[in-house]
Image 1 (spheres, helix red, strand yellow):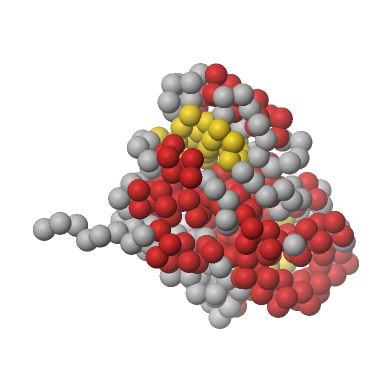
Image 2 (cartoon, one colour):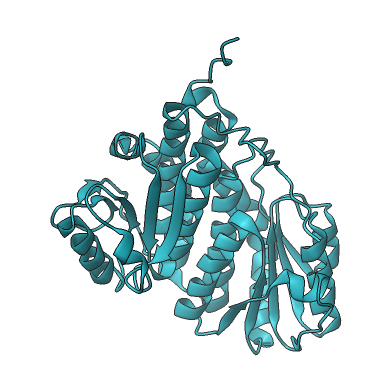
Length: 348
């Protein structure tokens, strides 16, 4: 019996849902404006000692982005709190006076809920970024910022990930009163719609027969690199690892030789020169380098929509999602139903 025909990329839920990101972000920014202003006013009146994040999977990549946004735009040290410290080891963390940011699409994972409750008991102010507003995680938080992504049925999270990033930026822009960042965020929905139309077909051509891949970013773009690597694994059956451009030279570079594929994300900030340098070094070894943002000798350039550097990682991952759906079909996978995975993972 022959295998069932795969859906065309544009017929998949992953494709349709990712295409909705611009509308979802516009909806989110409108709906959450007053609530985020209240949260920001509280944070200005009672600044936290530090910030801690709690998340799993794609949401943890959003937390990586949050770390760099909070640290570069506000100067607050931001750490990733491991949920298992609460759920498995039952060790109370000293979080008094902290801002505790819990990020989840479903809000159902018991370990995240347990850690949010423990953080609250420890004296942290808990803010939940969650798509399911009546979830246990939302109930555990002091404040809830709905992601407003709408239903997301594909196992691969797309628009909910982008909405998590935009919610983080909305909080920060209101907290520090950065008018330029706020204006760039207001322009994000249209920019997402524009970036969806860009031609990244070189990604499909370059990775159709690949077995391994490095995805490289740095700073604000590191979370996007981690997210892209995860999506390539779960939707395309491609072994991919996300690395910081600052870390990939500490060992992983030894694996790169002729034909080895590299995907690099480079936003327009002070990290660009280091990413271009690493991309050029990889290309000089004969690697197949695809570079989004910036230029490097020997690398193929993927087109991008220019924006504020905090915004650009969201635009790059949006374009990536469209091509990941196409790459999955090319490699013989249905991105909506990856083998052995399910939409909601309730980790304990």
